[in-house]
Length: 521
Image (tube, rainbow, N blue to C red; front, side, top):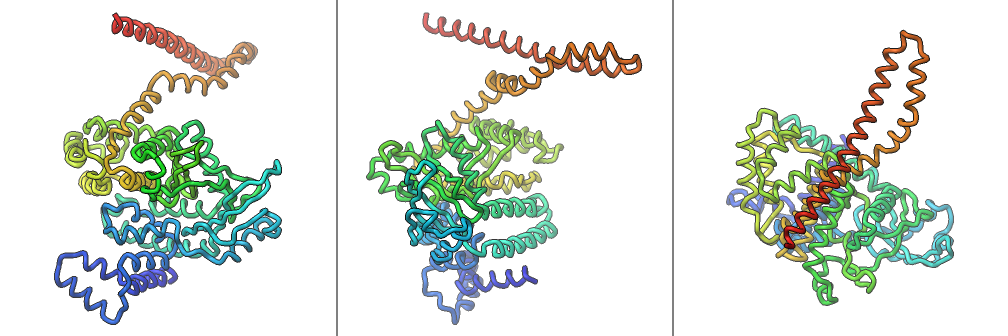
């Protein structure tokens, strides 16, 4: 009953803000437009359509606000007036009462807010769908006064999210049961993934841990800044982090006037994304413009500043290797390899003909190569790939939904910064280098180092194992000998691997020296 009531509430909001008219007016059929005019009788729809859409999403709650945030980055898919209004959802969601925020802080730390912070700004600096942020100062363990940002969770979020997720589960069940395509899309699993990410966002300690992990991962890259977390002041409802000073990435003209190299900034964004995805398998998955700033401080001029780490994506080694091989094959236009990878991974039925799938993928992707980003719509590419996947019964992978969403966010940011950016040529060298590291001697050396403690423990035990085997009763000899032989075989394989790797490394060096000398002389 609660789900049906929530569904009725959603329909009422759609009707109240005239969103049904936006949908019907988009069709070319005259009779549908006539229905739209009839339904608008007696309703006050004087406000601009973009404003009505934004206000409707705000009234529907955090899940719908997040949907609007994603849409706001796709200006190629939306009229400018609607995109501008939805952009306000990124950091200008109406704030809640500061007294509630202060009460939450005092309940979390069990002392007055004036004892927790040296100063606390009651007026929030940013307000989003899940939480809002206040600036403050505090003294750290060394007694140094630090400027901080205090993130406070919105009250009563869990019941609202549970209602919407319950409705989404019901709708996913309908889609899966009523359509053969629905089963292939795995809507229930996708909703389950979304459920996990939203509940993770409601735990600010988890978000603080995500920020700390990203900060460690990005150390040394010198392209992005991640705020420091003050763990003594973190709670599931309150998170305190270093205050970051930057310009929102959406203010491109201001950045250009300050001397920021905008094309380089766009390329750096692609590098950061692919580094997090393929090197670390741990990536910021909520990269809309409200969460991204650019530093103008002299020491860090032109670097990205990442904020809001409630949603992060993770990939296994298998996922990373599969995706990287797909990307590299795409960049090389090796569509046959892409088709083979889909079959090898089990994403398509094993009886699928490679040549047919190769031809279909080529027809989708070939028209978009060698074009700047302003002439490419990843949304259109994904839609055409979706149509192709339906024909070949490709199964959607729920664990990659966040990656697809983030890739669309990256495209939206890149389109705002530098429409001339060639996304393919920027990403190709990075992925090829990564693949070389995964399949070359560096990976062999990493695996040998990882297994070294195991074999270091095993080798000294071999004499004792031999002695124990000789002391055992004859009935036990066979099993002990088998164990001993297996241990000896593993040791032999390790030694052979080390010898072959060493010989291969030396031969590689000699070959490189020979090629250099031939080239020089």
